[in-house]
Image 1: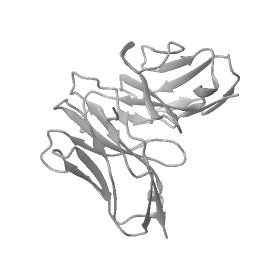
Image 2: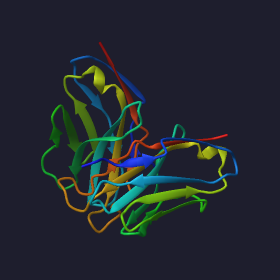
Image 3: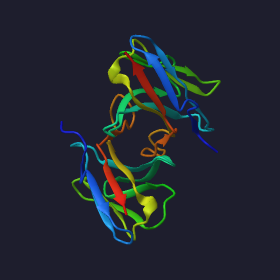
Image 4: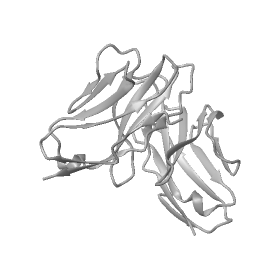
Length: 115
Length: 118
Protein backbone atom coordinates (compact mmCIF):
# COMPACT_ATOMS: atom_id res chain seq x y z
CA UNK A 1 0.00 0.00 0.00
CA UNK A 2 1.12 3.52 -0.68
CA UNK A 3 1.81 5.61 2.42
CA UNK A 4 0.26 8.86 3.51
CA UNK A 5 1.02 11.64 1.06
CA UNK A 6 0.99 15.35 1.74
CA UNK A 7 1.15 18.19 -0.72
CA UNK A 8 2.86 20.49 -1.07
CA UNK A 9 5.99 19.52 0.85
CA UNK A 10 7.21 23.09 1.22
CA UNK A 11 5.35 26.36 1.12
CA UNK A 12 6.24 30.00 1.66
CA UNK A 13 3.44 32.48 2.31
CA UNK A 14 3.11 36.06 3.43
CA UNK A 15 1.37 37.26 6.57
CA UNK A 16 -2.33 37.77 5.99
CA UNK A 17 -2.60 35.24 3.18
CA UNK A 18 -4.41 31.95 3.44
CA UNK A 19 -3.13 28.47 2.70
CA UNK A 20 -4.58 25.05 1.96
CA UNK A 21 -2.70 21.84 2.68
CA UNK A 22 -3.70 18.45 1.36
CA UNK A 23 -3.41 14.95 2.77
CA UNK A 24 -4.18 11.63 1.11
CA UNK A 25 -4.45 8.79 3.62
CA UNK A 26 -3.50 5.19 3.16
CA UNK A 27 -6.07 3.38 1.07
CA UNK A 28 -8.85 2.09 3.30
CA UNK A 29 -8.12 4.41 6.21
CA UNK A 30 -11.08 6.56 7.14
CA UNK A 31 -9.58 8.58 9.97
CA UNK A 32 -7.28 11.51 9.26
CA UNK A 33 -5.66 13.63 11.95
CA UNK A 34 -3.64 16.82 11.63
CA UNK A 35 -0.82 18.00 13.89
CA UNK A 36 1.25 21.16 14.05
CA UNK A 37 4.91 20.89 15.05
CA UNK A 38 6.93 23.92 16.11
CA UNK A 39 10.22 24.19 18.03
CA UNK A 40 8.52 26.05 20.86
CA UNK A 41 5.24 24.20 21.31
CA UNK A 42 6.25 20.79 20.01
CA UNK A 43 3.62 18.55 18.44
CA UNK A 44 0.07 19.71 18.93
CA UNK A 45 -3.15 18.10 17.77
CA UNK A 46 -5.25 20.20 15.41
CA UNK A 47 -8.25 18.06 14.46
CA UNK A 48 -9.41 14.65 13.38
CA UNK A 49 -11.82 13.69 10.65
CA UNK A 50 -13.63 10.42 10.25
CA UNK A 51 -16.01 9.67 7.40
CA UNK A 52 -16.20 13.36 6.43
CA UNK A 53 -17.07 14.49 9.98
CA UNK A 54 -14.84 16.36 12.37
CA UNK A 55 -14.68 14.07 15.36
CA UNK A 56 -12.17 15.83 17.57
CA UNK A 57 -10.59 19.26 17.71
CA UNK A 58 -7.55 20.67 19.46
CA UNK A 59 -7.11 24.07 21.03
CA UNK A 60 -6.48 26.21 17.97
CA UNK A 61 -8.17 29.42 16.81
CA UNK A 62 -10.92 29.39 14.23
CA UNK A 63 -8.45 30.44 11.53
CA UNK A 64 -7.54 26.76 11.37
CA UNK A 65 -10.15 24.64 9.66
CA UNK A 66 -10.32 21.40 7.79
CA UNK A 67 -12.51 19.07 5.88
CA UNK A 68 -12.58 15.55 4.59
CA UNK A 69 -13.91 14.29 1.30
CA UNK A 70 -15.80 11.12 0.51
CA UNK A 71 -12.57 9.43 -0.63
CA UNK A 72 -11.07 10.21 2.82
CA UNK A 73 -8.65 12.79 1.45
CA UNK A 74 -8.41 15.73 3.77
CA UNK A 75 -7.50 19.38 3.50
CA UNK A 76 -6.66 21.88 6.17
CA UNK A 77 -6.92 25.60 5.68
CA UNK A 78 -5.30 28.41 7.59
CA UNK A 79 -6.67 31.88 6.95
CA UNK A 80 -5.04 35.21 7.76
CA UNK A 81 -1.62 33.68 8.28
CA UNK A 82 0.54 34.86 11.16
CA UNK A 83 4.28 34.48 11.62
CA UNK A 84 3.62 32.00 14.41
CA UNK A 85 1.89 29.67 11.98
CA UNK A 86 5.28 28.74 10.53
CA UNK A 87 5.54 25.05 11.32
CA UNK A 88 5.69 21.52 10.06
CA UNK A 89 2.13 20.28 9.52
CA UNK A 90 1.79 16.55 9.81
CA UNK A 91 -1.11 14.45 8.67
CA UNK A 92 -1.75 10.95 9.97
CA UNK A 93 -4.23 8.30 8.96
CA UNK A 94 -5.48 5.32 10.89
CA UNK A 95 -7.93 2.45 10.67
CA UNK A 96 -10.24 0.89 13.20
CA UNK A 97 -8.81 -2.59 13.12
CA UNK A 98 -5.21 -3.63 13.38
CA UNK A 99 -2.65 -4.95 15.80
CA UNK A 100 -2.23 -1.52 17.37
CA UNK A 101 -5.57 0.19 17.99
CA UNK A 102 -5.76 3.27 15.84
CA UNK A 103 -2.05 3.22 15.07
CA UNK A 104 -1.40 6.43 13.23
CA UNK A 105 0.64 6.42 10.04
CA UNK A 106 2.19 9.79 9.41
CA UNK A 107 2.92 11.55 6.17
CA UNK A 108 6.17 13.41 5.43
CA UNK A 109 4.64 16.73 6.43
CA UNK A 110 4.26 20.14 4.82
CA UNK A 111 6.74 22.74 5.99
CA UNK A 112 5.02 26.11 5.98
CA UNK A 113 7.04 29.31 6.29
CA UNK A 114 5.20 32.58 6.84
CA UNK A 115 7.17 35.76 6.12
CA UNK B 1 -0.68 20.00 33.40
CA UNK B 2 1.79 18.29 31.14
CA UNK B 3 0.54 14.83 30.34
CA UNK B 4 3.69 13.42 28.75
CA UNK B 5 7.09 14.30 30.17
CA UNK B 6 10.37 13.51 28.51
CA UNK B 7 13.10 14.85 30.77
CA UNK B 8 16.07 14.24 28.47
CA UNK B 9 16.32 16.90 25.75
CA UNK B 10 19.41 15.20 24.33
CA UNK B 11 21.19 11.90 24.73
CA UNK B 12 24.44 10.46 23.41
CA UNK B 13 25.14 6.75 23.05
CA UNK B 14 28.03 4.80 21.63
CA UNK B 15 27.30 2.64 18.62
CA UNK B 16 26.33 -0.95 19.58
CA UNK B 17 25.44 0.04 23.14
CA UNK B 18 21.95 0.09 24.64
CA UNK B 19 20.18 3.32 25.57
CA UNK B 20 17.05 4.13 27.59
CA UNK B 21 14.86 7.11 26.78
CA UNK B 22 12.62 8.22 29.63
CA UNK B 23 8.92 8.96 29.47
CA UNK B 24 6.42 9.58 32.25
CA UNK B 25 2.75 10.22 31.73
CA UNK B 26 -0.24 11.46 33.62
CA UNK B 27 -3.81 10.29 33.14
CA UNK B 28 -6.82 9.37 35.22
CA UNK B 29 -8.29 7.25 32.44
CA UNK B 30 -7.79 3.52 33.15
CA UNK B 31 -7.73 2.81 29.43
CA UNK B 32 -4.92 4.38 27.44
CA UNK B 33 -2.24 3.59 24.92
CA UNK B 34 1.38 4.63 24.90
CA UNK B 35 3.39 5.08 21.71
CA UNK B 36 6.94 5.81 20.75
CA UNK B 37 7.75 7.50 17.47
CA UNK B 38 11.06 8.26 15.77
CA UNK B 39 11.46 11.42 13.73
CA UNK B 40 14.57 11.65 11.53
CA UNK B 41 15.69 14.97 10.15
CA UNK B 42 13.45 14.38 7.13
CA UNK B 43 10.45 15.07 9.37
CA UNK B 44 8.37 11.95 8.95
CA UNK B 45 7.12 10.30 12.14
CA UNK B 46 7.93 6.60 12.25
CA UNK B 47 5.97 4.35 14.62
CA UNK B 48 8.22 2.19 16.80
CA UNK B 49 6.27 0.49 19.55
CA UNK B 50 2.95 0.47 21.38
CA UNK B 51 1.88 -0.48 24.91
CA UNK B 52 -1.74 -0.70 25.98
CA UNK B 53 -2.64 0.04 29.58
CA UNK B 54 -4.11 -3.42 30.03
CA UNK B 55 -1.23 -5.28 28.42
CA UNK B 56 0.33 -7.67 30.90
CA UNK B 57 3.70 -7.89 29.25
CA UNK B 58 6.13 -5.22 28.16
CA UNK B 59 6.02 -4.60 24.42
CA UNK B 60 8.97 -5.53 22.23
CA UNK B 61 9.62 -4.87 18.54
CA UNK B 62 12.99 -6.02 17.31
CA UNK B 63 15.66 -3.85 18.94
CA UNK B 64 13.01 -1.75 20.68
CA UNK B 65 11.43 -2.63 23.99
CA UNK B 66 9.20 -0.66 26.28
CA UNK B 67 9.81 -0.74 30.02
CA UNK B 68 6.25 -0.19 31.24
CA UNK B 69 5.87 0.55 34.96
CA UNK B 70 2.19 1.30 35.41
CA UNK B 71 2.30 2.23 39.10
CA UNK B 72 5.05 4.75 38.42
CA UNK B 73 3.34 5.91 35.21
CA UNK B 74 6.48 5.47 33.20
CA UNK B 75 7.00 4.01 29.74
CA UNK B 76 10.69 4.12 28.93
CA UNK B 77 11.97 3.10 25.51
CA UNK B 78 15.01 0.83 25.42
CA UNK B 79 16.99 0.60 22.20
CA UNK B 80 19.47 -2.25 22.16
CA UNK B 81 22.61 -2.38 20.02
CA UNK B 82 22.38 1.24 18.83
CA UNK B 83 23.10 1.96 15.19
CA UNK B 84 24.17 5.19 13.51
CA UNK B 85 20.78 5.28 11.80
CA UNK B 86 19.09 5.53 15.19
CA UNK B 87 20.19 9.16 15.47
CA UNK B 88 16.91 11.10 15.47
CA UNK B 89 14.28 12.73 17.67
CA UNK B 90 12.21 10.31 19.71
CA UNK B 91 8.73 11.14 20.90
CA UNK B 92 6.63 9.46 23.53
CA UNK B 93 2.88 9.86 23.02
CA UNK B 94 -0.33 8.85 24.73
CA UNK B 95 -3.88 8.32 23.61
CA UNK B 96 -6.57 8.20 26.26
CA UNK B 97 -9.67 6.10 25.99
CA UNK B 98 -10.48 3.03 23.99
CA UNK B 99 -12.37 2.58 20.75
CA UNK B 100 -15.08 4.82 22.08
CA UNK B 101 -12.73 7.57 23.15
CA UNK B 102 -10.65 10.18 21.40
CA UNK B 103 -9.23 7.86 18.80
CA UNK B 104 -7.37 10.42 16.80
CA UNK B 105 -5.86 12.55 19.51
CA UNK B 106 -2.28 11.73 20.39
CA UNK B 107 -0.63 13.80 23.12
CA UNK B 108 3.10 14.09 22.55
CA UNK B 109 6.03 14.79 24.80
CA UNK B 110 8.68 17.35 23.87
CA UNK B 111 10.99 14.68 22.55
CA UNK B 112 14.54 13.47 23.11
CA UNK B 113 17.25 13.98 20.53
CA UNK B 114 19.38 10.85 20.37
CA UNK B 115 22.83 11.00 18.83
CA UNK B 116 24.70 7.76 18.18
CA UNK B 117 28.48 8.09 18.13
CA UNK B 118 30.64 5.79 15.99
